[in-house]
Length: 487
Image (cartoon, rainbow, N blue to C red; front, side):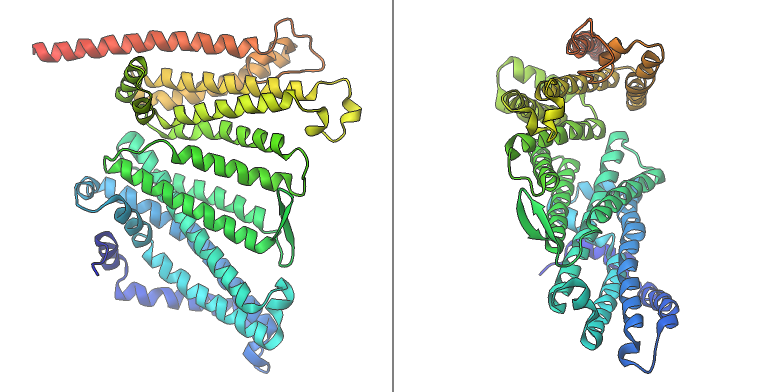
């Protein structure tokens, strides 16, 4: 069996004899310094306090090692490759996308996995002794010790893969947008995965053994629900990294995995939000999935580099009515935005045929308010505002200074969503608020202009500006081409 060449390279680089000795020594000293204060030599295993302290410290150390050292090592691997100009050579090698993916994922972090393995063994051993002598684990979790150890191991390994794959994915995406690498990209990737991990840990930290989590009205064991969720999202992160690697190796991806991931995330999230709710779940599920899709549309639009060549091919295939080819050339955010439109249409239809109690249990207090109608109108306005934002992003990318396109777009977003509505509210012009945000109903304002007309007018205006800039960009490109041919 031939070892993955990328993994073999990292094994030689990362696992030197000195580093192999250093890791257990450092971890052992830290555990010793913390555990010595609770050690009781007169009791088996050093006493329950000692075993509990060691297991807790080792498991917490595992998480901290992954978040701080693992995420940084994974992100730094790609930045170092690009900075040292060795990444182009690797892309020209015979290594396939999948081999390159898992080779970099596990190879660049092999030293972190070595430290995590040590801490995991310490955690499992101390927990086993703790339960064997004092039944400390089973009394807290309500499960047998083998089942608890399996849950902990699978959960920690899944979290490690999720964090490290996400870190590499973020760095690869940010670097590809500039075709250059900075050490700041490592810090940005680490901050992103740290925020995501803290949010996940915070969400799952309240789950105790024996508790039940309700998902679409069905009860599941809390710990197993958390573990399975981590495993599924870890698989999605690996799939995303593999797809990104295919792009780096000049392979074409059909834009289907991101919409599927958004759909999965929306369904998972709506099940958690609904909990024990069993009635009207269809409308609320479609609504939550649609909102999730709306927010997620910004992600590929911001991270992907706008390629005018692909846009030209997309327009050409649409004009020739070759829709299958159009999907292949379509940017990911275009496909995601189209999927969101389907969700908006379904949500509006379901809201308009539903009763006020679907969205608000205290419907009797708001009997005179058309809650589903307001929700439907707000959803449509929100979608139009997102459409405007995406068109503005394209408009900035087609300018003369593409390096500042994203910064320019961020300034526009700050003005449109922040400064402008604050000024309008400060001078009492509440009737103009729907021009800057999806306000559908403001109790203390009479709208002379229907709120939906504002985003429609803005979309039309930005679309006309984009058409003008596109023609200008195309004519400038033709002029440069003819000048080059004459030379």
